[in-house]
Length: 469
Image (cartoon, rainbow, N blue to C red; front, side, top):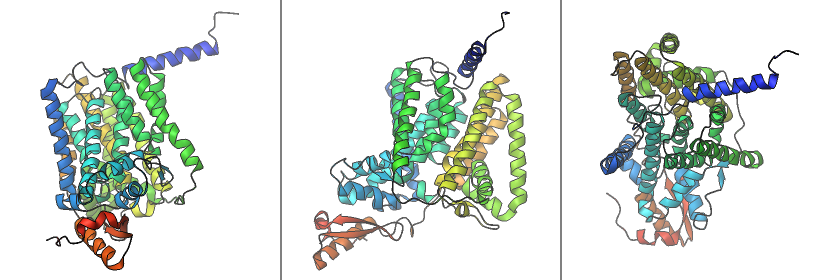
């Protein structure tokens, strides 16, 4: 026998080589100082930016609507659960067939406030979760997007996502989509400290305990597990494994009535419209372009994006190419499977000559992943050429993406989210309690046909209150 390597040794060598390559490319460490907050001034700046992020989300819905109306499942499912159970006992109850820990925690926290302030508590706490998701993206993307300008663009896209419709802004029910996007980046992140790793791990774990959507990141998590080099990495991978695994028996054994999955070829068209078009131009401008220009516009956009991707891949580096190779298939799979599983393909597609924003939650993560690919490729290409500043193409890409935010910023729709005002609904319900001798009463919320049942004893302070002006 000669010194020919064995199969096992050859495989081991290949795995070591892959591990080394991943360590130097996909799972890069951020430059020293990029992910540190400089003293109390830095901390104060972070708090100010988080507060600004929350306020901007409220203005997207309309401050009055956001603070004085309770939205959809926030009231009917999550607040109702908090009202019906002992303190914190409902947090691990399932909804739609899986654990939804974060929305239930938001409901429990909101229920600690006076009844009249519950909608404001829901909106502000939900906005805080989205703002923290943006903060996580800022730190976790530092190794792949060195330019603060380009990275700030990605954070703005995260917090003010231009494909998110009314349903997914300042709403506890859908903060999970923003958390999923942040968790994708956290799985790529190389934290510089154990404290950062623990915070990132807690965030990923909470995401996993709130949505099985974390399963879509299994290929990325597998590569990250292969490239583990210290306990900080182990914390992030362990948090992913725990969160993703917790949903498996819940989903498998759940007996709640579920939507029957429905496949339709419309899903592919919807991906081009809602994700490719939406990622580039935002829901409003992208929808208008489709409405007036139709398929010729969409085909030109697709060809342009494919050409730009090829050019960017050739002129960037292995780090950017690895990122694109993970993010693009994840975007496609997440949208197609989610829309199929929830049987909303027909609702997501834009018919010829029209567009609508409904179902925007399914577009959030896929569209943000494509935007991330564009920003990573631009940043890496500039670094490869040794450019010290953002090149004109980077500025152009950011301007287009930020215009998408601007044109899609306003999602205010008072008839659907804002009617009836929460205090008016409470007064009306209190009057019914008094006149009909009820022990509990249904209180209407937004949108129409949603509501929450509240014990009449909690409405006593609204019985003689003057009507709102």
